[in-house]
Length: 102
Image (cartoon, rainbow, N blue to C red; front, top):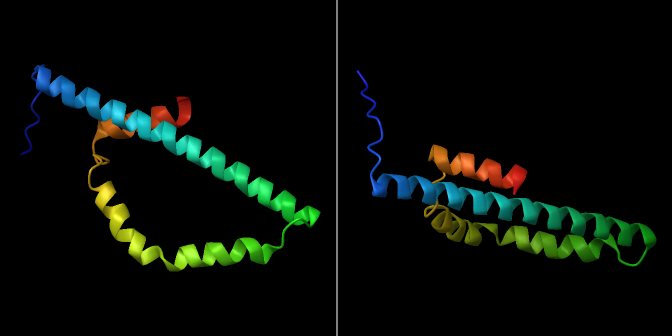
């Protein structure tokens, strides 16, 4: 049998809830901004290729080199992700609010 205890309303409990909510909101808003900038860069590159100012190889070669360095970056990403409480419901709610409303 699983026992679910009600929150006790202490300052520590409320502070941890608010901290994860705000952290999720900030990361959600940052993710939204990064996606917007990425979409703008993608459209700009497509337009420049269509107009003939750049060739596709000028874009593909640096991207391939970046992807080849992926395994080295995976360890750093896992280390940073270890600090985030992404399994917390309040973090997820804050992230969604930040991503869609932030």
